[in-house]
Image 1 (cartoon, helix red, strand yellow):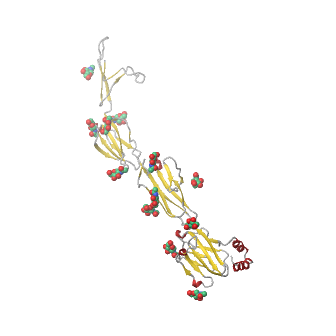
Image 2 (cartoon, rainbow, N blue to C red; image 1 turned 90 degrees about the horizontal axis):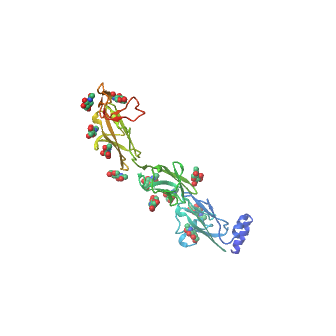
Image 3 (cartoon, rainbow, N blue to C red; image 1 turned 135 degrees about the horizontal axis):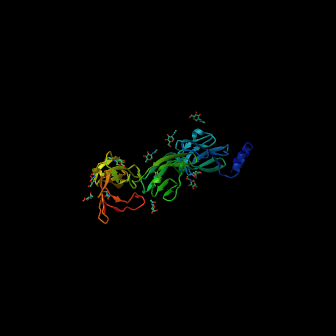
Length: 365
Ligand SMILES: *[C@@H]1O[C@H](CO)[C@@H](O)[C@H](O)[C@H]1NC(C)=O
Ligand SMILES: *[C@@H]1O[C@H](CO)[C@@H](O)[C@H](O)[C@H]1NC(C)=O
Ligand SMILES: *[C@@H]1O[C@H](CO)[C@@H](O)[C@H](O)[C@H]1NC(C)=O
Ligand SMILES: *[C@@H]1O[C@H](CO)[C@@H](O)[C@H](O)[C@H]1NC(C)=O
Ligand SMILES: *[C@@H]1O[C@H](CO)[C@@H](O)[C@H](O)[C@H]1NC(C)=O
Ligand SMILES: *[C@@H]1O[C@H](CO)[C@@H](O)[C@H](O)[C@H]1NC(C)=O
Ligand SMILES: *[C@@H]1O[C@H](CO)[C@@H](O)[C@H](O)[C@H]1NC(C)=O
Ligand SMILES: *[C@@H]1O[C@H](CO)[C@@H](O)[C@H](O)[C@H]1NC(C)=O
Ligand SMILES: *[C@@H]1O[C@H](CO)[C@@H](O)[C@H](O)[C@H]1NC(C)=O
Ligand SMILES: *[C@@H]1O[C@H](CO)[C@@H](O)[C@H](O)[C@H]1NC(C)=O
Ligand SMILES: *[C@@H]1O[C@H](CO)[C@@H](O)[C@H](O)[C@H]1NC(C)=O
Ligand SMILES: *[C@@H]1O[C@H](CO)[C@@H](O)[C@H](O)[C@H]1NC(C)=O
């Protein structure tokens, strides 16, 4: 530091003692950033501390050095109108009378090193600072590897945002997402991978992001398609009385809901829908009823069958045989009834529940 600079220093030190401290540290100019964490679109002031009064010029460079190709501006405190713009000037920079540099409407590419240089009689000093422009989070978006996730397939959700230094975490149905097993987070938590999906993974996934200046989130509804699982027809009863009404109901776990088609005796299609109704059973309604469940998204089918036998109610049960029987003679008792496909059992006495039948068939010898 030259003698003139020291003289100035002493003069000003009486007014400001902090100035003395900063200058006492050597030839490097301390620079204060206002604000310290600038935001995109806003402005920053780079204020050098302890500007000497007899300064001839101050220059600013967008670099850690005084490389002339990176010069933004040279300012003459005694003649501001003579300020010289350099190659790195972008119309957003203004030098104030105190040699501070104001940069307005910041964008991310203004982040980096800035150097100021002072010149004057006996003054030759530089100082360097740097800052990073924070870009607030915006345009958060989740893109999925597939529009429709079918169970047991790999699904990847990719969370992106415009924003600098963003940290990410995820919620499932507004609760913290537990990862592990087939659910993996990678790439700074931006990539959520299901290797592979399970139907329980369906839900609302929220990607949350935050950085020094903002936070944001976005959600994605994951619908895992599956099924149809095993098809069940109810009731599973085989025999039905003639004339009764019969409603067969078919169901299968499926997402989306399965489409049901009914067939009789193999391939003869008789109806669609979860229920098949026969208002009054006739003998011709007997048959093998098949329900086929089809999922239009997974293209999977599942089928199940029940056999329906329509029978006339057993009525008019009559035992016929000889009225008088000689001991030792061969006797045949006939049992008859109205009804179809009737099976017969014989008991002695009324002990049907206690004993095995004596015989079966419509004749007892
Ligand atoms: C600087 O220029 C402005 C107009 O451009 C003028 O009004 C002002 O007097 C000038 N200042 C000096 C110190 O020349
Ligand atoms: C600020 O800069 C952006 C580009 O970084 C530009 O689109 C916008 O018009 C500028 N705004 C102002 C007020 O200069
Ligand atoms: C700032 O300068 C330092 C030292 O020269 C260098 O390591 C760093 O990469 C520079 N930063 C930027 C953003 O250019
Ligand atoms: C999210 O990204 C998709 C695909 O790139 C795009 O179609 C969609 O418009 C984006 N949504 C938002 C809110 O940016
Ligand atoms: C996530 O999305 C970003 C932006 O679209 C893209 O650059 C990146 O490659 C994607 N990552 C994966 C794993 O898909
Ligand atoms: C959810 O995660 C956040 C951030 O990791 C944590 O602060 C919070 O305590 C967690 N909440 C629950 C209920 O675990
Ligand atoms: C999925 O998991 C299987 C077995 O755990 C592994 O072999 C495979 O590399 C994984 N795939 C991806 C894309 O992570
Ligand atoms: C009923 O029909 C289905 C389909 O044709 C067949 O698989 C099944 O064996 C049949 N059941 C009976 C008892 O005949
Ligand atoms: C199914 O087949 C049986 C035997 O061939 C027949 O008696 C019955 O009428 C058929 N059922 C229907 C509904 O066609
Ligand atoms: C289901 O079948 C349709 C028509 O053949 C086809 O376009 C679609 O890709 C199939 N879906 C799956 C998951 O295989
Ligand atoms: C056949 O018997 C069942 C049960 O005993 C009864 O509900 C039904 O009404 C009877 N059907 C006829 C046609 O009598
Ligand atoms: C019993 O039925 C048989 C034929 O099923 C017939 O031949 C016989 O005469 C009948 N007996 C009586 C006593 O009705």
